[in-house]
Amino acid sequence: MPVPTFSILICNYNHGCYLPQCLAGIRRQTFADFEVLITDDGSTDASQQIIADAAAKDPRIKPHYFAKNQGAMAAVADIWGRATGSYIFGEGADDFMIDERFLERAAAGLAAHPDAAGFFGVAGLFSAGKNTVVGKIGSAARAGFVPPEECYRDILRGRMFVPGSSSIWRRDCLEEIGGYDLTLGPQIDFLVNHALPSRHGAVFADVAVTCQRIHENASNFGSKGGTLWESTGRLAKVEQRMREWARPYDGMEADWKLWRARWTLDAIRTSGVHINPPR
Image 1 (spheres, rainbow, N blue to C red):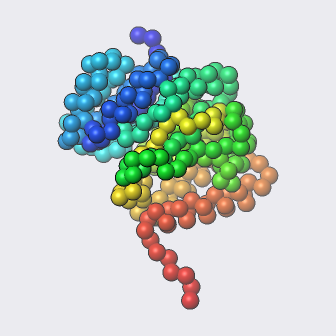
Image 2: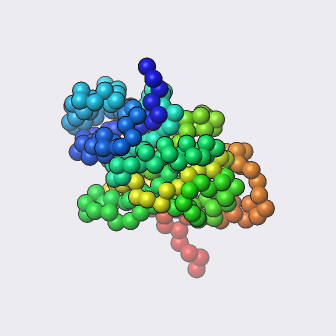
């Protein structure tokens, strides 16, 4: 069988109420050469029936069902092992595409810039409680191709942000850094989204292409997984890997201090840990 251009990876657990919107956004895409790989992690709601019905209507949808819940990392390992596309997009089961030309834009951008590791656009932040867009993420200094040296510097300085919910990566670039590192926990795209642009550059479209659903009543830190100390340990691992993969530049050490401080503070904030100021 011919290899699809895009592999869209969806890990699902009890997100049946969101799956129809997620799958509808994919099926509306103007660029139709893709496969949709879904690993259902033993859902107990109507998810598996919704997935089965969608797969019966569209052979590009290829599901795999766990008999019981095995956790996010097992689902990621399963779905990554089944992907065959040249470009990889990981979509949350509760997220959805809003631009019908998202894949078309990515295909054109990556064809025009064959050295780029991937493509990303703007992702809206969709409030599950308010049922509306409340913000957006995804930024770069300019639209179009951003070279690796500029990506590295701007990521460290907080001037560039690559959301996992709107980024597509070349499969060979992912494999070059070992794929998705499962030891980083549920936030496995954090390393990918930092390392690949810093190593090869990326193409940015200043267009809203997807929506990432946020659940205000859920613990943000819990979604990242583990304790504060585990989170800071993962940050240290990201730094170590990026230093190995990206090219050094003048002033880099000062930028790394800024990056480390910013993300450590974010880990503290989302952990719920209160640090009392000195008296």
